[in-house]
View 1 (cartoon, rainbow, N blue to C red):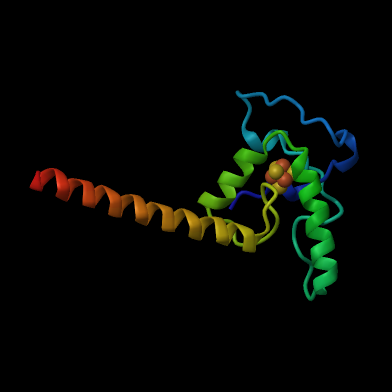
View 2 (cartoon, helix red, strand yellow; view 1 turned 60 degrees about the vertical axis):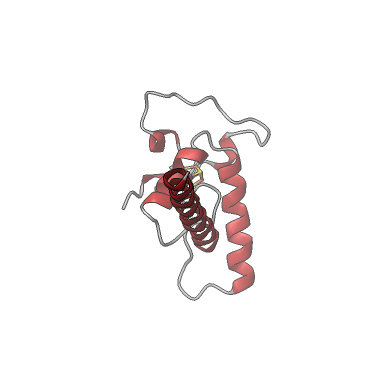
Length: 123
Ligand code: SF4
């Protein structure tokens, strides 16, 4: 499991309205805005009350919203899949929803392809 993005945090360094340009040659996690996370925004402490969790997750998502590698981070977390924490602006529960939608979409595409094959063979 890859951990570097959440090992540190740099929230105040990036203005809210600007997302820095992405260096396409660098590994995505080297440009993670959260690399100096000392506030622990991205992972829940044990026995965290619901209101505190929601507030912490929203704060983490605000960091993600101005991160130049949000797309790469999100895909990494979906493909692994990462079971805990906020990655790419999504909580673990939100990632499970995205993965379920992708599985459903893939099944529908396969079904449509099989139907198209049958029609072509019959035709
Ligand atoms: S999208 Fe969020 S979790 Fe991912 S690297 Fe950027 S700040 Fe960190």
